[in-house]
Length: 145
Image 1 (tube, rainbow, N blue to C red):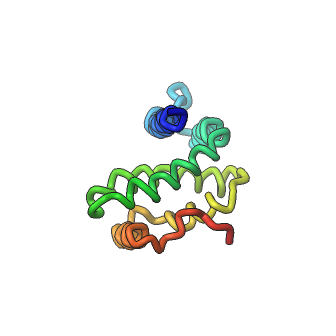
Image 2 (image 1 turned 90 degrees about the horizontal axis):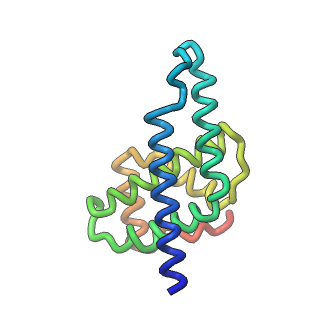
């Protein structure tokens, strides 16, 4: 039962992180700041996202593994897996921004994820990743390079 509670807690945290990231991107906190300060606005958004994500990197890594090894792998086709790839795309975008722009330190596992899932907006890449995951040839355990 402890695993189920842990899993439920992880799902709630991930759902909340994704909602907060969407909120920050869609409703930034710069209502009184004019558009003359776009770099300041972007910096504030990035700082808020960083504060949400960095303490939860291990949890995010576990969730990525779960999405790849169970959720996507158990889908019958790419259309069924779309919602999971969409979640992975959001996670990848945020992690890439934090890694490259904010210079946060992340594990080799997450660096591999950032590289491998960089173009999830590309249907060809999604299809190939889906096939590799289904066949078990994608290294979703994030072996160290």
